[in-house]
Image: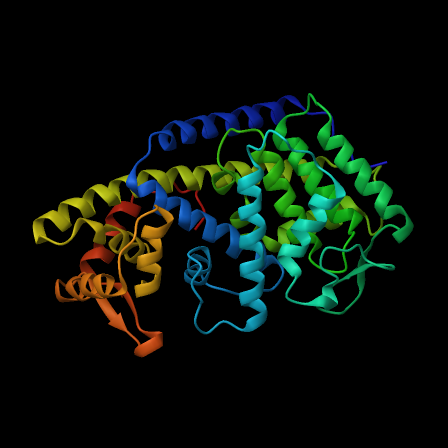
Length: 375
Protein backbone atom coordinates (compact mmCIF):
# COMPACT_ATOMS: atom_id res chain seq x y z
CA UNK A 1 0.00 0.00 0.00
CA UNK A 2 1.21 3.51 -0.85
CA UNK A 3 0.16 7.00 0.22
CA UNK A 4 -2.87 8.03 -1.82
CA UNK A 5 -4.30 11.37 -2.89
CA UNK A 6 -7.03 13.00 -0.80
CA UNK A 7 -10.44 13.75 -2.25
CA UNK A 8 -10.03 17.19 -3.77
CA UNK A 9 -12.30 19.95 -2.49
CA UNK A 10 -13.83 22.73 -4.56
CA UNK A 11 -11.06 25.08 -3.35
CA UNK A 12 -8.42 22.51 -4.38
CA UNK A 13 -9.92 22.27 -7.86
CA UNK A 14 -10.06 26.07 -8.13
CA UNK A 15 -6.37 26.25 -7.21
CA UNK A 16 -5.53 23.62 -9.83
CA UNK A 17 -7.39 25.69 -12.42
CA UNK A 18 -5.37 28.73 -11.37
CA UNK A 19 -2.12 26.79 -11.81
CA UNK A 20 -3.29 25.55 -15.23
CA UNK A 21 -4.03 29.14 -16.25
CA UNK A 22 -0.56 30.29 -15.18
CA UNK A 23 1.02 27.47 -17.17
CA UNK A 24 -1.06 28.24 -20.22
CA UNK A 25 0.11 31.84 -20.09
CA UNK A 26 3.71 30.72 -19.62
CA UNK A 27 3.47 28.27 -22.48
CA UNK A 28 2.12 30.98 -24.77
CA UNK A 29 4.84 33.45 -23.81
CA UNK A 30 7.64 30.88 -24.15
CA UNK A 31 6.31 29.20 -27.29
CA UNK A 32 7.87 31.52 -29.87
CA UNK A 33 11.68 31.16 -29.88
CA UNK A 34 13.30 34.38 -28.66
CA UNK A 35 16.96 34.90 -27.93
CA UNK A 36 16.35 35.84 -24.32
CA UNK A 37 14.47 32.60 -23.56
CA UNK A 38 17.74 30.67 -23.80
CA UNK A 39 19.24 32.77 -21.02
CA UNK A 40 16.04 32.49 -18.96
CA UNK A 41 16.04 28.72 -19.40
CA UNK A 42 19.68 28.47 -18.32
CA UNK A 43 19.11 30.55 -15.18
CA UNK A 44 15.91 28.65 -14.33
CA UNK A 45 17.85 25.39 -14.60
CA UNK A 46 20.51 26.84 -12.32
CA UNK A 47 17.90 27.87 -9.75
CA UNK A 48 16.44 24.35 -9.74
CA UNK A 49 19.86 22.81 -9.12
CA UNK A 50 20.71 25.34 -6.43
CA UNK A 51 17.32 25.03 -4.70
CA UNK A 52 17.15 21.25 -4.50
CA UNK A 53 20.68 20.92 -3.17
CA UNK A 54 20.25 23.73 -0.64
CA UNK A 55 17.56 21.61 1.06
CA UNK A 56 20.24 18.99 1.71
CA UNK A 57 22.63 21.57 3.19
CA UNK A 58 24.78 22.14 0.09
CA UNK A 59 25.19 25.92 0.09
CA UNK A 60 25.98 27.44 -3.30
CA UNK A 61 25.20 30.68 -5.05
CA UNK A 62 23.15 31.09 -8.20
CA UNK A 63 26.43 31.88 -9.97
CA UNK A 64 27.71 28.45 -9.01
CA UNK A 65 24.58 26.78 -10.34
CA UNK A 66 24.82 28.72 -13.60
CA UNK A 67 28.46 27.73 -14.03
CA UNK A 68 27.58 24.09 -13.48
CA UNK A 69 24.77 24.33 -16.06
CA UNK A 70 27.34 25.80 -18.47
CA UNK A 71 29.67 22.90 -17.59
CA UNK A 72 32.23 25.26 -16.13
CA UNK A 73 34.08 24.65 -12.86
CA UNK A 74 32.77 26.89 -10.04
CA UNK A 75 35.58 28.59 -8.17
CA UNK A 76 35.70 28.44 -4.38
CA UNK A 77 33.16 25.64 -3.82
CA UNK A 78 34.05 22.71 -1.61
CA UNK A 79 34.28 19.41 -3.45
CA UNK A 80 31.16 17.90 -1.88
CA UNK A 81 28.95 20.80 -2.94
CA UNK A 82 30.49 20.91 -6.42
CA UNK A 83 29.79 17.20 -6.94
CA UNK A 84 26.24 17.57 -5.61
CA UNK A 85 25.50 20.34 -8.12
CA UNK A 86 27.03 18.40 -11.00
CA UNK A 87 25.17 15.23 -10.04
CA UNK A 88 21.81 16.99 -9.95
CA UNK A 89 22.56 18.64 -13.27
CA UNK A 90 23.19 15.24 -14.83
CA UNK A 91 20.00 13.76 -13.38
CA UNK A 92 17.86 16.70 -14.49
CA UNK A 93 19.45 16.64 -17.93
CA UNK A 94 18.37 13.01 -18.16
CA UNK A 95 14.85 14.07 -17.12
CA UNK A 96 14.88 16.62 -19.94
CA UNK A 97 15.78 13.86 -22.38
CA UNK A 98 13.10 11.49 -21.08
CA UNK A 99 10.33 14.09 -20.99
CA UNK A 100 9.16 13.33 -24.53
CA UNK A 101 10.52 9.80 -25.06
CA UNK A 102 7.78 7.64 -26.64
CA UNK A 103 9.42 4.42 -25.47
CA UNK A 104 9.34 5.14 -21.75
CA UNK A 105 8.33 3.31 -18.56
CA UNK A 106 8.88 4.00 -14.89
CA UNK A 107 10.85 1.18 -13.27
CA UNK A 108 13.31 0.46 -10.49
CA UNK A 109 16.27 0.85 -12.85
CA UNK A 110 15.21 4.39 -13.74
CA UNK A 111 15.12 5.44 -10.08
CA UNK A 112 18.44 3.75 -9.38
CA UNK A 113 19.98 5.48 -12.40
CA UNK A 114 18.81 8.91 -11.26
CA UNK A 115 20.18 8.20 -7.80
CA UNK A 116 23.52 7.07 -9.25
CA UNK A 117 23.87 10.29 -11.23
CA UNK A 118 23.25 12.39 -8.12
CA UNK A 119 25.40 10.52 -5.60
CA UNK A 120 28.12 8.67 -7.54
CA UNK A 121 30.89 10.89 -6.15
CA UNK A 122 30.87 8.78 -2.97
CA UNK A 123 30.64 4.98 -2.93
CA UNK A 124 29.64 5.25 0.73
CA UNK A 125 26.25 6.50 -0.54
CA UNK A 126 25.71 3.19 -2.36
CA UNK A 127 24.91 5.07 -5.59
CA UNK A 128 22.27 3.25 -7.62
CA UNK A 129 21.63 0.62 -4.94
CA UNK A 130 18.94 0.21 -2.30
CA UNK A 131 19.90 0.67 1.32
CA UNK A 132 20.86 -2.50 3.18
CA UNK A 133 19.16 -1.94 6.52
CA UNK A 134 16.97 0.31 8.63
CA UNK A 135 16.93 4.03 7.86
CA UNK A 136 16.26 6.89 10.25
CA UNK A 137 15.83 10.60 9.57
CA UNK A 138 17.21 12.65 12.44
CA UNK A 139 16.68 16.25 13.48
CA UNK A 140 19.90 18.23 12.98
CA UNK A 141 19.56 20.19 16.23
CA UNK A 142 19.48 17.32 18.72
CA UNK A 143 19.86 14.12 16.68
CA UNK A 144 16.41 12.83 17.66
CA UNK A 145 14.64 10.50 15.24
CA UNK A 146 11.80 12.16 13.33
CA UNK A 147 11.10 9.41 10.82
CA UNK A 148 11.82 5.70 10.35
CA UNK A 149 11.49 4.23 6.86
CA UNK A 150 9.77 0.90 6.16
CA UNK A 151 11.65 -2.36 6.67
CA UNK A 152 14.25 -3.00 3.99
CA UNK A 153 12.41 -6.15 2.96
CA UNK A 154 9.43 -4.03 1.87
CA UNK A 155 11.42 -1.61 -0.28
CA UNK A 156 11.58 -3.55 -3.59
CA UNK A 157 7.84 -4.31 -3.50
CA UNK A 158 6.89 -0.72 -2.62
CA UNK A 159 9.07 0.69 -5.40
CA UNK A 160 7.54 -1.71 -7.92
CA UNK A 161 4.11 -0.63 -6.74
CA UNK A 162 5.05 3.03 -7.12
CA UNK A 163 6.42 2.55 -10.64
CA UNK A 164 3.41 0.44 -11.61
CA UNK A 165 1.02 3.16 -10.46
CA UNK A 166 2.90 5.76 -12.51
CA UNK A 167 2.76 3.58 -15.63
CA UNK A 168 -1.02 3.18 -15.35
CA UNK A 169 -3.45 5.70 -16.80
CA UNK A 170 -5.00 7.89 -14.13
CA UNK A 171 -7.74 10.47 -13.72
CA UNK A 172 -5.76 12.28 -11.02
CA UNK A 173 -4.55 15.77 -11.96
CA UNK A 174 -0.88 15.49 -13.06
CA UNK A 175 0.23 17.91 -10.36
CA UNK A 176 -1.34 15.73 -7.66
CA UNK A 177 0.09 12.58 -9.21
CA UNK A 178 3.57 14.10 -9.29
CA UNK A 179 3.26 15.27 -5.68
CA UNK A 180 2.28 11.76 -4.55
CA UNK A 181 5.21 10.24 -6.46
CA UNK A 182 7.51 12.63 -4.59
CA UNK A 183 5.89 11.83 -1.25
CA UNK A 184 5.94 8.06 -1.70
CA UNK A 185 9.56 7.89 -2.80
CA UNK A 186 10.80 10.07 0.04
CA UNK A 187 8.73 8.10 2.58
CA UNK A 188 9.90 4.71 1.30
CA UNK A 189 13.41 6.16 1.66
CA UNK A 190 14.94 3.37 -0.45
CA UNK A 191 18.48 4.77 -0.56
CA UNK A 192 21.11 5.31 2.08
CA UNK A 193 21.36 8.98 1.11
CA UNK A 194 19.96 11.30 -1.55
CA UNK A 195 16.32 10.29 -1.12
CA UNK A 196 15.01 13.86 -1.13
CA UNK A 197 16.90 14.80 -4.28
CA UNK A 198 15.72 11.63 -6.03
CA UNK A 199 12.10 12.30 -5.01
CA UNK A 200 12.18 15.90 -6.23
CA UNK A 201 13.75 14.78 -9.49
CA UNK A 202 11.03 12.14 -9.92
CA UNK A 203 8.34 14.76 -9.35
CA UNK A 204 9.86 16.90 -12.10
CA UNK A 205 9.91 13.91 -14.44
CA UNK A 206 6.24 13.06 -13.80
CA UNK A 207 5.29 16.68 -14.52
CA UNK A 208 7.53 16.81 -17.58
CA UNK A 209 5.81 13.78 -19.09
CA UNK A 210 2.58 15.80 -19.29
CA UNK A 211 4.18 17.87 -22.04
CA UNK A 212 2.72 21.15 -20.76
CA UNK A 213 6.04 22.92 -20.21
CA UNK A 214 9.72 22.06 -20.20
CA UNK A 215 10.83 20.49 -16.88
CA UNK A 216 13.09 23.51 -16.42
CA UNK A 217 10.02 25.73 -16.12
CA UNK A 218 7.73 23.26 -14.30
CA UNK A 219 10.04 22.33 -11.42
CA UNK A 220 9.48 23.86 -7.99
CA UNK A 221 12.90 23.12 -6.46
CA UNK A 222 13.65 26.82 -6.16
CA UNK A 223 10.52 27.44 -4.06
CA UNK A 224 11.20 24.38 -1.90
CA UNK A 225 14.78 25.51 -1.37
CA UNK A 226 13.54 28.86 -0.08
CA UNK A 227 10.93 27.21 2.17
CA UNK A 228 12.97 24.30 3.46
CA UNK A 229 11.61 24.27 7.01
CA UNK A 230 8.01 24.33 5.81
CA UNK A 231 8.88 21.48 3.43
CA UNK A 232 10.31 19.40 6.28
CA UNK A 233 7.42 20.30 8.58
CA UNK A 234 4.73 19.10 6.18
CA UNK A 235 6.67 15.89 5.50
CA UNK A 236 6.82 15.29 9.25
CA UNK A 237 3.11 15.99 9.62
CA UNK A 238 2.09 13.60 6.88
CA UNK A 239 4.72 10.97 7.70
CA UNK A 240 3.81 10.68 11.37
CA UNK A 241 7.24 9.35 12.35
CA UNK A 242 7.15 6.03 10.49
CA UNK A 243 5.81 4.32 7.36
CA UNK A 244 2.05 4.89 7.64
CA UNK A 245 0.61 5.14 4.10
CA UNK A 246 -2.97 5.39 5.34
CA UNK A 247 -2.33 8.87 6.79
CA UNK A 248 -4.02 11.94 5.33
CA UNK A 249 -1.99 13.45 2.47
CA UNK A 250 -4.03 16.64 2.15
CA UNK A 251 -1.43 18.88 3.91
CA UNK A 252 1.20 17.66 1.46
CA UNK A 253 -0.91 18.13 -1.66
CA UNK A 254 -2.02 21.61 -0.56
CA UNK A 255 1.59 22.60 0.20
CA UNK A 256 2.64 21.43 -3.26
CA UNK A 257 -0.19 23.30 -4.97
CA UNK A 258 0.84 26.48 -3.15
CA UNK A 259 4.43 25.91 -4.27
CA UNK A 260 3.34 25.62 -7.90
CA UNK A 261 1.27 28.81 -7.71
CA UNK A 262 4.12 30.81 -6.18
CA UNK A 263 6.71 29.38 -8.60
CA UNK A 264 4.50 30.12 -11.61
CA UNK A 265 3.84 33.69 -10.43
CA UNK A 266 7.55 34.29 -10.04
CA UNK A 267 8.37 32.76 -13.41
CA UNK A 268 5.75 34.92 -15.14
CA UNK A 269 7.37 37.98 -13.58
CA UNK A 270 10.77 36.81 -14.80
CA UNK A 271 9.47 36.20 -18.31
CA UNK A 272 8.16 39.75 -18.50
CA UNK A 273 11.33 41.15 -16.95
CA UNK A 274 13.52 39.17 -19.34
CA UNK A 275 11.69 40.45 -22.40
CA UNK A 276 11.83 44.07 -21.21
CA UNK A 277 15.47 43.68 -20.20
CA UNK A 278 16.49 42.19 -23.55
CA UNK A 279 14.76 44.99 -25.49
CA UNK A 280 16.39 47.67 -23.34
CA UNK A 281 19.80 46.03 -23.62
CA UNK A 282 19.44 45.69 -27.38
CA UNK A 283 18.86 49.44 -27.64
CA UNK A 284 21.79 50.15 -25.33
CA UNK A 285 24.15 47.91 -27.30
CA UNK A 286 23.08 49.50 -30.59
CA UNK A 287 23.55 53.04 -29.22
CA UNK A 288 27.07 52.21 -27.97
CA UNK A 289 27.90 50.22 -31.12
CA UNK A 290 28.85 47.15 -29.13
CA UNK A 291 28.71 43.61 -30.56
CA UNK A 292 25.13 42.29 -30.56
CA UNK A 293 26.42 38.94 -29.28
CA UNK A 294 27.45 40.66 -26.03
CA UNK A 295 23.78 40.80 -25.02
CA UNK A 296 24.26 37.45 -23.26
CA UNK A 297 26.89 38.95 -20.93
CA UNK A 298 24.75 42.03 -20.27
CA UNK A 299 21.70 39.91 -19.53
CA UNK A 300 23.48 37.79 -16.89
CA UNK A 301 25.27 40.71 -15.27
CA UNK A 302 22.11 42.83 -15.05
CA UNK A 303 20.48 40.04 -13.02
CA UNK A 304 23.31 40.01 -10.50
CA UNK A 305 25.33 37.18 -12.02
CA UNK A 306 29.09 37.00 -12.26
CA UNK A 307 30.29 36.79 -15.85
CA UNK A 308 33.45 34.86 -16.71
CA UNK A 309 35.12 34.31 -20.04
CA UNK A 310 34.19 30.63 -19.87
CA UNK A 311 30.52 31.13 -18.94
CA UNK A 312 30.16 33.82 -21.62
CA UNK A 313 31.46 31.41 -24.25
CA UNK A 314 29.31 28.59 -22.89
CA UNK A 315 26.15 30.67 -23.37
CA UNK A 316 26.80 30.47 -27.12
CA UNK A 317 27.54 26.75 -27.06
CA UNK A 318 24.13 26.08 -25.49
CA UNK A 319 22.62 27.82 -28.53
CA UNK A 320 24.84 25.72 -30.87
CA UNK A 321 27.08 28.71 -31.63
CA UNK A 322 30.71 29.31 -30.80
CA UNK A 323 33.14 32.13 -30.11
CA UNK A 324 36.82 31.87 -29.24
CA UNK A 325 38.38 32.66 -25.89
CA UNK A 326 40.15 35.63 -27.50
CA UNK A 327 36.90 37.01 -28.96
CA UNK A 328 35.14 36.62 -25.62
CA UNK A 329 37.98 38.40 -23.84
CA UNK A 330 37.84 41.24 -26.33
CA UNK A 331 34.09 41.61 -25.91
CA UNK A 332 34.34 41.72 -22.12
CA UNK A 333 37.10 44.35 -22.23
CA UNK A 334 34.93 46.54 -24.45
CA UNK A 335 32.03 46.24 -22.02
CA UNK A 336 34.30 47.30 -19.16
CA UNK A 337 35.54 50.27 -21.17
CA UNK A 338 31.92 51.23 -21.85
CA UNK A 339 31.20 51.19 -18.11
CA UNK A 340 28.61 48.42 -18.38
CA UNK A 341 30.74 45.83 -16.60
CA UNK A 342 33.25 46.09 -13.78
CA UNK A 343 36.24 43.77 -13.28
CA UNK A 344 36.67 41.76 -10.11
CA UNK A 345 39.47 39.36 -9.11
CA UNK A 346 42.64 38.31 -10.88
CA UNK A 347 43.73 35.47 -13.13
CA UNK A 348 41.61 32.34 -12.62
CA UNK A 349 39.32 34.24 -10.26
CA UNK A 350 38.72 37.11 -12.66
CA UNK A 351 35.09 37.83 -13.36
CA UNK A 352 32.84 40.72 -14.26
CA UNK A 353 29.81 42.23 -12.54
CA UNK A 354 27.21 44.76 -13.62
CA UNK A 355 28.22 48.39 -13.79
CA UNK A 356 25.95 51.16 -12.52
CA UNK A 357 23.93 51.52 -15.78
CA UNK A 358 22.94 47.84 -15.77
CA UNK A 359 22.12 47.86 -12.04
CA UNK A 360 19.88 50.90 -12.47
CA UNK A 361 18.19 49.38 -15.52
CA UNK A 362 17.37 46.14 -13.70
CA UNK A 363 16.09 48.02 -10.65
CA UNK A 364 13.65 49.95 -12.84
CA UNK A 365 12.42 46.80 -14.55
CA UNK A 366 11.98 44.92 -11.28
CA UNK A 367 10.05 47.80 -9.79
CA UNK A 368 6.87 46.35 -11.29
CA UNK A 369 7.25 42.84 -9.90
CA UNK A 370 4.14 41.49 -8.13
CA UNK A 371 4.27 41.36 -4.35
CA UNK A 372 3.26 37.69 -4.37
CA UNK A 373 6.47 36.65 -6.12
CA UNK A 374 9.36 35.34 -4.05
CA UNK A 375 13.00 36.11 -4.76
